[in-house]
Length: 396
Image 1 (cartoon, rainbow, N blue to C red):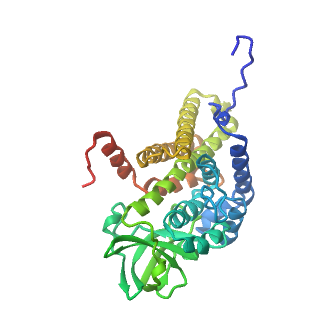
Image 2: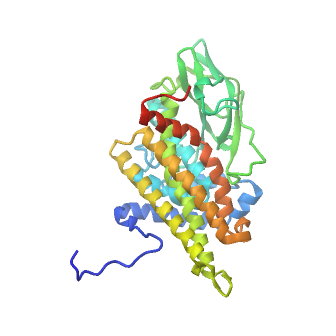
Image 3: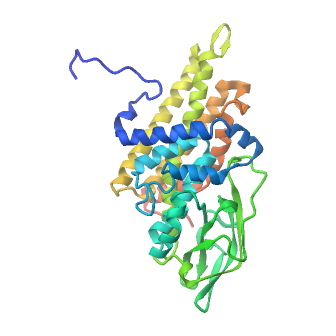
């Protein structure tokens, strides 16, 4: 750039010019999801959260399907075939509305649909994926158990052969979408190792009681899955995977979406803090004019946009087929942790108003407490990175 060239203006909403890294189609997808969330979620989310429910979830799922947001990075079967970066941008915009909405999409696409798409038979893919991509069928993913979260290898849910059939028995806990799902991907112990099963939720012996009294992810359907000798045909098993490699690869794909999504919650809280600081007056002037408030805003902006840059970098690596699970752990560990800190600091700027549902900050902060520990706790991701850095396994 010559000395006489005019620099572009500084954009407080994009201080690093990250949009310059995005293609026109990336921006179009981002803007489509942002507009949908602004129209269909934002006017209602505080009420949904206060009531502890997500009314009209089936209609929301169909709308998300109509804009290509379900299983959007998968190819074929009615899926959008979007890039990893485009999927990440969608997750960011959805979680800027609410973590519960992003969780609906993540569990549908990155867990249930991804498992069937990657490990299922052609018959399973044809039966389930088109309806799931359209939002006509909601899916859930059963891995975590009441007594086994971070150690899924110790799961007690089991499936035994009975002639050519399978008999599935066990319980899963903290399952997003469970009580509204039409299909569940359930992982169970078998004589051959851990296997995945595609379970229609209307099968006799299957039930999904909803979990109530949550103080986080309140605008989200969370359930227990109970399998009481559910009889499944031989073709219910996912044929192309045995062992923990199956569910862990699904989790890695979903964690990638969290790397982006957490920055959406952080952005929403940060924007609320900036807006408040510009208008809230104390000692005769806006609090945004005081040095301590500006220091907080500057530190939050640095971590927010570093996190978005990290998410974009990981997306580029995923699109190139180079993204390792350890790198996903790096992203989830950093971005969720920083997102929570951004929410907490934003709350201090809003003062007492920060705890009101009139503003999004406390809602995002409490949601992120769940995001921090689901799909891998902080400690588990620290140990994943610790093993990668030292070559020594500290899990056991």
